[in-house]
Image 1 (tube, helix red, strand yellow):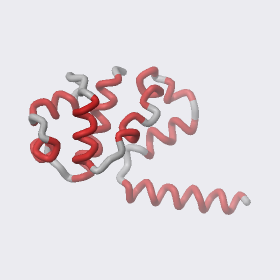
Image 2 (cartoon, one colour; image 1 turned 135 degrees about the vertical axis):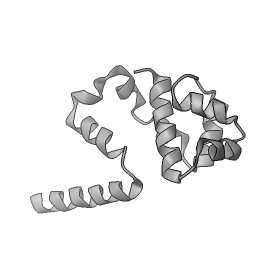
Image 3 (cartoon, rainbow, N blue to C red; image 1 turned 45 degrees about the vertical axis):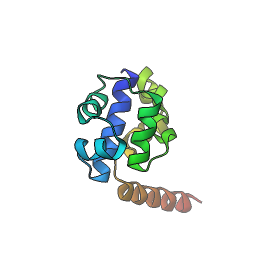
Image 4 (tube, rainbow, N blue to C red; image 1 turned 90 degrees about the vertical axis):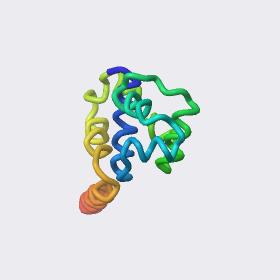
Length: 112
C-alpha cells in the first residue's frame, strides 16, 4: 500500500469521526475541498504544511497520523498479533476503543 493511500484513509477516518464533510474540513484548514478529497483517496501527497493544517482542524496530533504507518505500507502489520489488534481497534470510535481497553484491563487483572 502506498503511504499516501494509508495517510488518506486515516485523515478520512478522523474527519468522519468529527462529523465533518470534506467541505467543512476544507474551510477549517483553508484548503480546497477537491484537494481534501484527493488526499483522502491517496491521489495527492500532501505537504507537511497541509498535514499540519488538517491535523489542527481535526484537533489531532500530527504524530497520530503517522503512528505505525510503516507497518501498513510494507504489509508487515499482519505479521504480529499486537499489530493485528492495533489494526482492528484503531478503526473504532474513541468510545469503542475505551470499552476495548477496559475489557483488556479486566482480563489482565483476572490473569493476575
